[in-house]
Image 1 (cartoon, rainbow, N blue to C red):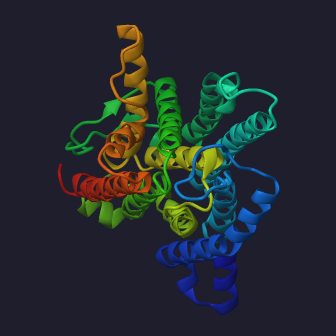
Image 2 (image 1 turned 90 degrees about the horizontal axis):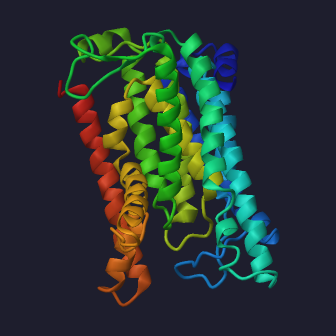
Length: 378
């Protein structure tokens, strides 16, 4: 591990401090993404790794799978700066395994849409396959990986063995939900898979998914740092979770990589994150909420993910219940606003920018609200 190696060589305790290591992880992750992403974009363009989604201004659609580089950077940087424990390794395992599922989905999209461009089928004939692997298979893989990691975490992380769920507005010492061990493992798996699915739905406009991922990482990083400190957690009446403060370094690596990615993904995007990034980071963020015992606060801080996933579920349910009627003009919800704003603005880019900025502002507001609710409103 780089930080401990530097501490041994220099004799400076500075390199062992969590705040220093978190800041170092964020800076190094940002620098690596800024340095490597142009090369990655050129490489993907040579492979014709593009989708047929319309870009906001480029005639040639940007390549997808930008998230694969982000995942690789976060894995390397986290291992360099974090002191590995069960919680760090579990999050990195979810990040890597979910990114593989997303990469398979991205490759399936690229291959199918390449066949469409070569005239080997129409878009209508291949629509089911053009979205990658089936939703049922994707969800099955989500739950399969998360069940294995959640079971291992339940066995080896002491504060998870109580199988409790903290509720907003209630002190943990007053009341918590208690579940049987097997039910708690399933609950953890559901949180991870649902967050990954919500992030995947959110990745539909330039930079739309990046900011809520950053705000969620910042929230869990701050909570992890406070809850990992016995004195501060006692003062703020939050659970003391030994070892969870090491997740601050993972949060720093994620935040740094994602913010540097915005340099290339800001409208108009030069590259898309793709399922490899949105699913990977979504799953990792979900596991971080589990380890910090803030699963219910995901409904607040991850409000954008919730709204996107819920809009899809409501659209499908309403369509089936009414025999073809639509609750929204299009789902996920950002496409509904896209259709609505296109009636108000002459240029599509103006409509998209309005949606993106308003979603970003919602994410930032929900971050502040989540921090206030968790630390002070009890």
